[in-house]
Amino acid sequence: MKSAVILHGCCDEAEYFSNQYPSSSNSHWIPWLQKQLLINGIFTQTPEMPEPYKPSYEKWCQVFEKFDINEKTILVAHSCGAGFLLRWLSENQACINKLILVAPWLDPKKIKAPFLTFTIDPNLEKRVVEMHVFISEDETVDGVRESVETIKAMFSKTIFHQCKDKGHFSFEEMKTDIFPELLEVVLS
Image (cartoon, rainbow, N blue to C red; front, side, top):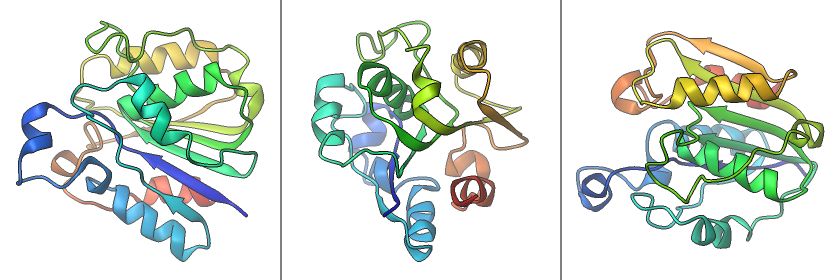
């Protein structure tokens, strides 16, 4: 049975503790995408990762590793959640169906070190049937463009989706919580 796990990114401490914002796993397009995948018969989880304002790789692994990750799994992640998946897949030998990274952030300036301090496995692409990266021309988060260039240099089979007017793919920048282009790639 196909399954999917969607990971959110990091946020700042003020946003995390504010009642004005939903939890990270219920932000932006994540709940909409989960619902669409469920409707399409793909069992989908959107875990709330611990303390995304000060992420710990070990704590995120404890949550993530509760899921059965296998050759039928689709992994989708936003921002530093994408960086987490690249690290986890680099350090583990899991084979998956699809890896879809939205505005991937690898922390090139080591702001949240040691969370994303790792070496990407150059053989990772061999364990993934399809790998996709979404990037917007008007990306607003420092380090995302550099991260995308790192991914491009390492993985020749990865499909890059250049978008317009989506910023960092947040609700505030997209002005919507639906992301049909992403859904199309997940379902294709």
